[in-house]
Length: 161
Image (tube, rainbow, N blue to C red; front, side, top):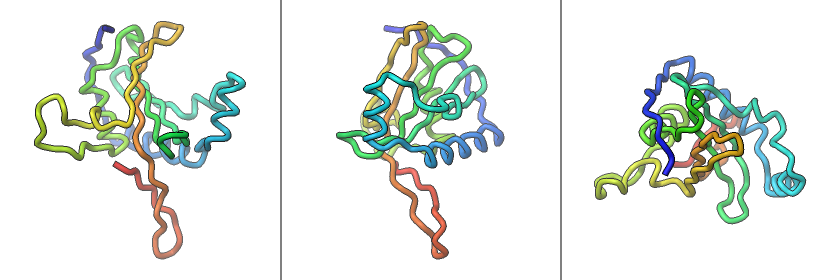
């Protein structure tokens, strides 16, 4: 089992604003199944990969994309890693706080036995991966719902929970 970093998460209005911009960018640059298969078959990285990431004080980094999965449909892929100590996995409570505070992903199941509730347990997929550079990344998948339009026809971004 990987070591876990116990860093606090500091989320202020500036970080929330950056997360909103990141989500909007990911929506505008979402990757459909055909694009994803083509990119992965050639081994190329996501175009403008840095544009899909943001820093979260104190020492966390997050990558956020919206992509189509052959089995799950449209999903949000959220990856969190500890920038200050990349060989340590981010603390689960910190990951949950980032998901809730920045991406408005909240647990739906309440009143269940301890360890079974929470936003991390409701993910479609949770993977912890050690990258070739020894950085440990926690990657989660959540459903994505396309925006509904208001009475004027403007899209309103809605994240399915």
